[in-house]
Image (cartoon, rainbow, N blue to C red):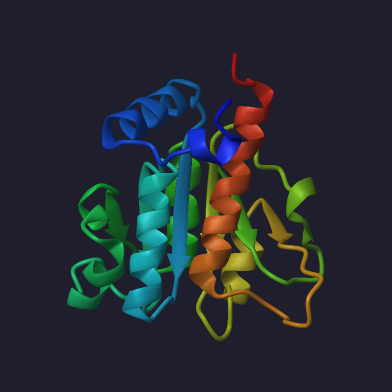
Length: 186
C-alpha cells in the first residue's frame, strides 16, 4: 500500500527552511525599501519591521510621530528582526521620499486616494520604496503629493481598510511576487 499525500507531507526542518530561503534570495535582485509615516503603535511597527525583514527590505525611513524600533514593545512583535533592517528617523515624510529617490527608488504610497490604482496595476517593478501611513489617518497630504504613484489594496469584504501592518505586508509580498513571477522557479 502506498502512503497517502498527507502521510508524506511534513513541515520543513530548520535546515530545509534555510535552504529554501537561500534559493529565494538568489532569485531576488530588485531593491525594496519602506517609508513609515506616523505609525504610533509600537506593536504595529514591530509587525511591519518583521515583515520588512522577511521580504528583504534594505532601508526603513521613519517619519512623523512613528514609534521607534528601540521602543520595548516594538521588540515584542519584531522578535529581534529590528536588528536586521537598517532604519533612519527623518523630520518629515517628504524628506524620506527625497532620501529614497536619492538612493534610486521609485516611491509608491499605499492609500485610499482619488488617483490610486489597484495594487495589481501599481508600478512595483524594479527598485521600489513603499509607503504606509498612520493607523487612523493614513498618509499625509504632503506625502501623497510627493510620491510617484499611489496604490490601494482591493477588498471585497465589508471592511473598509486593513490594519497598517497587514497592509504593509500585503504590499511587500506583492512587490516580491511580481519580481519572482518574472523569473519562475526552475
